[in-house]
Image (cartoon, rainbow, N blue to C red; front, side, top):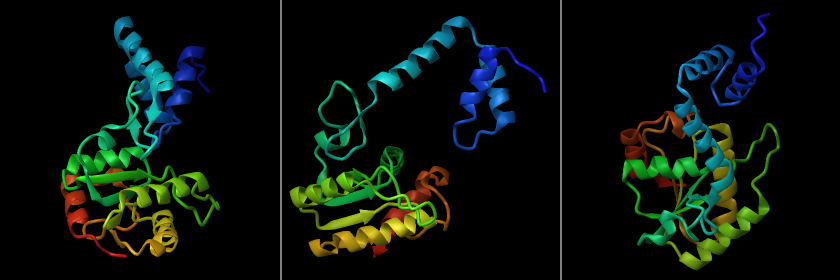
Length: 200
């Protein structure tokens, strides 16, 4: 097997940790990065440093926020408190915002239930969700969760946990292919899925 210099092997190793990146792709990306000049690589390194040290999450909805701010962009703006959209991760918030179809508030679960691995939703995150619902008093809760096995299990769990609030609960339907993550859905399809949501 070819032995690369340590710095290149290390770069390939960490690139492979990214979702969907195998050895060949990581190798290609690493060699592409080697063609960058020192200033570009320094800027990239600074960006990684900022992510490591400045990443911060909103204490109300758990999406990403600036480290210098107390609340996120979505909780400080004038949003519609009548609807609360529950998503799995911060990236889902930005995907939905790109579709420009939702004007309400968000809540990030942080993870999905996994019937296969037994992974659970963090209890503290669930308690804070219920507190957020009591505070906002929304008329509708929207489950914007992937149409996967984990997403289905999570949606069912949330429905059972939140039904005592007597609030309308809906889930995205139209245009959401089964087994597909938000990552692979364009904004137009996501907008149609949001508009065509159904009671759950």
